[in-house]
Length: 193
Image (cartoon, rainbow, N blue to C red; front, side, top):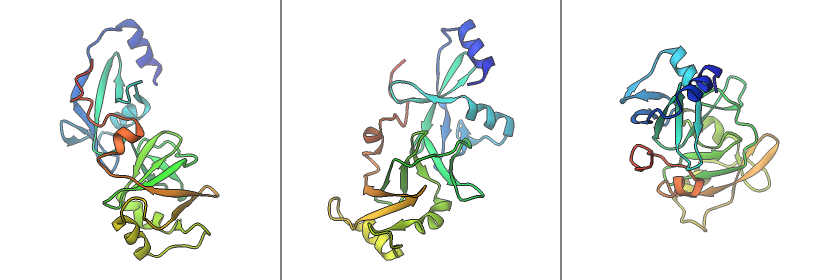
């Protein structure tokens, strides 16, 4: 968090929160009242001051004012940088991937060091090259399609090779994702202070 933000919070501790203004799309773009934010300085300021509270609500701390973020899917969006490493939409390294899931639409969801995030769909084809079976043999697209189409508990075994380890890939329903991973996708609707 920026030092100026921390000082403003101490100086004005009771500024009401803002809801319904800021959102994060599935590709990691910030939107203000539905319109994309393109100002680089503003994007960087939001990124440095993006955090969550103990209830799993994500926000941008704008000086003394907390601006809750409505999430199109997850709190983080992971993508590949120029070296092939996973990074968040804020430029933070993903670090070790702890768990991985594929939802019914074929989206890849990871829990990295920053937290849960969906992989940017533009990087899915590249990351699909890192999918393998339990023995480490790369899998073909038809096996991934079979995994997506299978019912929970009967899916073929998939692993994601990342950081020198193979992480088991599970199935998750998009409707169950937020509760399972402990975040509030729409804090503007949760009614909490």
